[in-house]
Length: 165
Image (cartoon, rainbow, N blue to C red; front, top):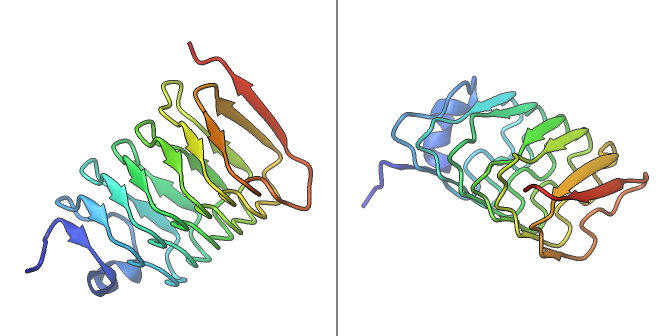
């Protein structure tokens, strides 16, 4: 039985040529939905999107921006892996963990920000592996766990943890 609130790889063909906005009724972008679709430059989510699956945008080499992630609660492993042109990312307030390899090889990532009321508790293994242009990251104080090789890169990275409240 087909779930009309989930977009998967088959439905992605509709969006992939000129992605501007994910449909109004979509709650989840399923695993591998846009994986390897190199023509996508911008992904504009709607307020109903709650989950981005594993590898959902992996290998979208031209992806530069992901907009309107206000209500996203879950971002899967490797969701944005190898999105080389992704240069800026505003992390959603409701997400509690950055899963393994979420931003691995996002070599263009320069700016990564967290909201003032971040719920982030965990950053898993290799989450920012080889994000070589990311040179400064301010983590919420609520982070309780940082995995292995999270910040492995060729260049130096300054990491700051500050009190939100």
